[in-house]
Image: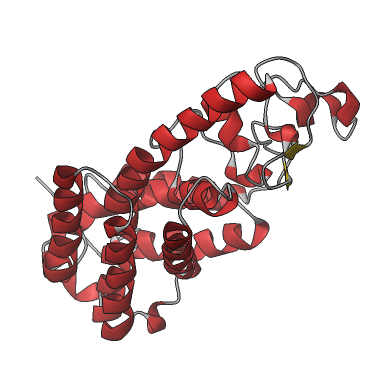
Length: 286
């Protein structure tokens, strides 16, 4: 019997092998197989465009915003609380927020629930960030593509006192968009929901205090996707290019909760159908 996959923190979770195989197979087929444009109805096109914008525009913008704030917090706590030494502090003192030390230093895998034996040394700003998240959200190794939108939004929402209340409010709104996207109920993605989702993403970016150049470029990208995104999905090559991005996102979702594993199965099945996984499409990209 195969051993169940485990997270980087040692928490085991049973992932359906057929789901992960299907996502890998779908990703492998994308460069070679294109969809018949008619397979996508308007709701499905809107769904795909929102997903692309969340992953390829909003996530990078949040990384630029979050990292300097967390870096400053790490330096502050290193000086004041000596968190880079093996001290024991179960809470973030300014707000008495519980800190999840099981998420770092392989503590959960090594010691289980014997928390007195944990290594409480916070060795980096990445380690610090993981203390504020649930264990299933801490698979990232740096503030790069491995740190997905769910984790970034969670950091803004959970580290109370370090982010403006307006940003937290808008982050919660965008998290709602992201969660509904993960549920993959295409019937909900009508023109109104599409427009509302882009407004919420725009509102968040406008409050991130990015440089004027970065903010302008990000808002321009959001506008481009909102206006032109669905029409670009009439091109079979473009469909496959965009699905590459979203298949990677689905793999991140599959590493989250049990409910989201089921949801990612629905998304992956949809992607597979779009690229002709079921044999409906025969067009080949040159």
